[in-house]
Image (cartoon, rainbow, N blue to C red):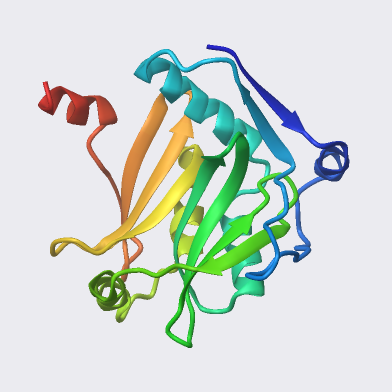
Length: 208
């Protein structure tokens, strides 16, 4: 499969100037979300191995880091970030950041991975039990989603940060992509201690 990344001219000019440090804000619930500056052309999808390679391509295309995307989302929608994921939405890459607001709303904020602009946001109608589990997991937490992402920045490109609200070992689940492939990590919500999850290949073999 051949995959091409196209970054709009304005975004490319901004990126060439250095690290994104300012966050422009556009989009809201009443207006359609703006188009991401990072576009993907899919010729075809063949198999899981090529999908894994695509994840690496997407990671390289996202010039805005998870930490920067979370900061942009929280500047637009104050609250507590509970997840940040780089996603392919109709051939456009976006950072999707979920925020629990002080008003008890669960909002999804889309951030351009090329410019750090907020493209739009909307209320997520999550199940009350799901929201309650996340709030319970976050109770007493001293490590934020951005701090968890920062802790793994040296291990590769962070493509996903999500709070693990299942079981007793609650923490941040962080996914990175590097030359060695995808890896999953756990970051303790209170101490910030980082532990490696099992390699993805091991998980796949368990299903055979």
